[in-house]
Image (cartoon, rainbow, N blue to C red):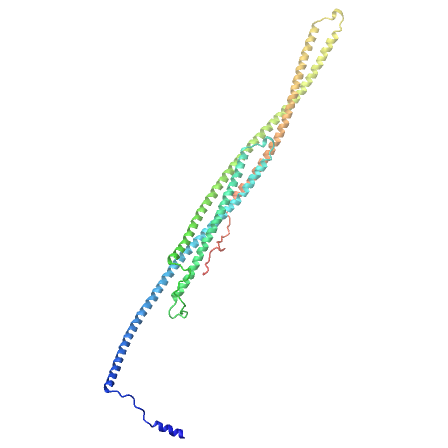
Length: 436
């Protein structure tokens, strides 16, 4: 109660008056307030005008910068797309060249495999002809042609093997160049995705935000000149590899044709020499058979003549015995009857004549027997040589039959061969990029 009375009494007391001002001070204060208000309004008006000008200027600048950035992005997208198309075109040509080179390599491998039969046939013919005996084992033109053929086949195999190895190395180079192109194309596709995504962004896009230090230069970044030079280098490297591969394919095709012509020429020369040699051997065999038949006929006649000579010799010996006996008996005549009469002279002459005849017959018989023995010996030699000639002809015939495998193989080679579609370095017939 007392507290309430005290507080009401204190509130009724008057407030202490403040500092008093004069009228001039009052007027001065009013003037200052008005001037200050006018100045602030002027400053505010200037700031507003500058703000509006800045807004208009920054809006135009931002719009222009955004438009210029979009144009630059669009140009960049076009450049990247153009280079991507050029790289893809080069990669497609590179794939075609790899397939062509691989096909040429396979054709060369087939040509190398085909030489196995001629090599086997040549060695087999040489082995067969080494089975000849006696004078039939001669170093004839067939031997020379067969050895030349085997040496030629060995040289052809070496040349084809060298081409196959070079083609394999070049395929590896093409695959490496294709890998570089694939990597470059993939990088450009990723860059296109990023630039096109950036080109599609607007201020209203929900995925935009402030980033930390966005103006930094990324490590391992390249200049536009380096970027162009890198793609130009990849394309130039691929084109150079394709050009070398084309020259290699042309060289391989020409080499295969030349070597095949050489093999065909040598094969015909060998077969001609073999046929000629076979003809000569047949002639020699026929001549020898004729000689054998004539010799056999002569031997038969000689044997008949020997029998005749022997019979005549026996007759002449008997006549000589008769003359000797007569002469011996007439020596027993007595007295004057032991006369050297005409009979005596005739018998003596007969004896001399018979002795000469017997001597001549014996000599001729000896000569006939010696000649017959020589003919028999030579006949045996001719029979032996005929057997060798027959054996040699049989070997030549087997060699000719063996060489028929070459003509059958060449006819088989002329038939079209179904080829399996080739695969490129990645194992697919058409390369597919990672982003496709």
